[in-house]
Image (cartoon, rainbow, N blue to C red; front, side):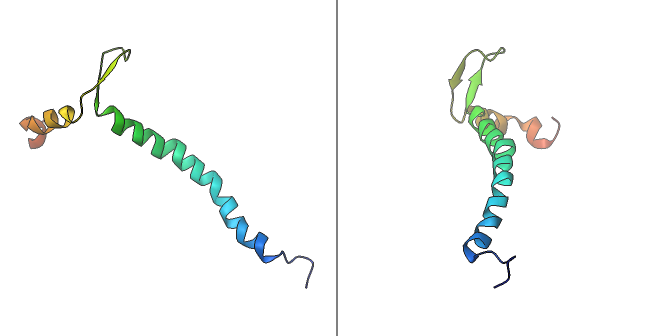
Length: 74
């Protein structure tokens, strides 16, 4: 066996080790903020963000009840 050959166990582990930093970056900069945005869509917060109240789907009900938004008139 040539010297540069690695055992198969190390060759199989390397691709996963190279994926770990990308997975961490994807989680920190995409999934975590997206999950926070979804969670905050179920809350009502005061103007300064000091208190929040869980209101469930009320924000979505108000959104879909606003006909101007649905017609694209903003």
